[in-house]
Length: 248
Image (cartoon, rainbow, N blue to C red):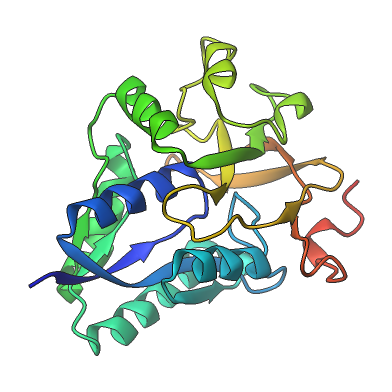
């Protein structure tokens, strides 16, 4: 009997490839995709994928989508609370496994385990500790299609927004950028491939630059600059997001 699991869905390439591997293994029954979204702009964190596109991804994949909304002003505190609510929701359905697409960031995995293990949830990582070059090669061979929608501005400029992640993209990345973007160098939107029944239609709009200030472990604050795509669904182009207002 397959184990009931929730798949933590970012909408990007690593998440899509981890789901692809999960479905191939047939070990888990993915009862839902789980995505945390900003309660104010209705977009996912970092990738900035609008709810409409997240839902269209889920519809094409054929797995229900559960949205956990967090208040961006409350930062981690509210994120933890919304994840706890999700855990309580899925525990009632007999779910004891949460699947993620992490690769080698030990602090991220430790954080997930610290938050979830006390509630009887086992963290599952299909891509964990594999060589990045091997993952990228397998990803490209899988047929999954994805584009860049966010970049760290100091490492990858506006020209990378909207590029397809293919062999040419990988070969032309700067030497100081992880080819999978595992350190946050870039984030993507996956729209087609073997896990989808049909392609998800989207528009890119005009990209823009913004910044995030992060409280570091040593008590200091650090500001990170990012380029974002103005990503939207072609089926909901009339929707106006607060996220992109007055940002250009």
